[in-house]
Image (cartoon, rainbow, N blue to C red; front, side, top):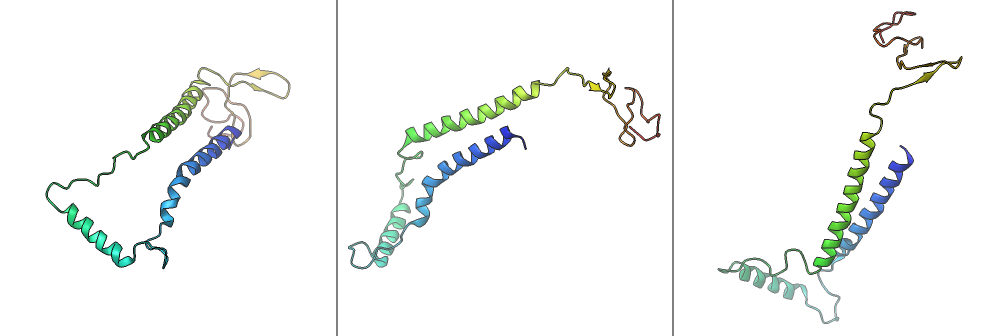
Length: 143
């Protein structure tokens, strides 16, 4: 893996971590409060939950009343813009990298310094083969 891919992977992991960390506090939610703190007990919470269910089942009770995109719409838009820039940058990099190398011909230099435009070599004995050859003239192996 080359250095650019490694850097892109590390950057993606760091950005992903920053996007996931704010949601972890939900996993540590408490269902009841400690004794003597003045909070609702489990029985009170059960009664409130039953009331919520009966209210939700009434005619015309649609939705929870919570905004669909949350209260921090500006943070949502900022994160969408950041992800669009990152994904667009990666797509642009692949697009530019895909255009490189077209029309280039491989040039190989032999031990005596002469160059050749043919890039075919026998995988068995290493002798250079012509462009139209299908078998090696030296050992007979398929090229």
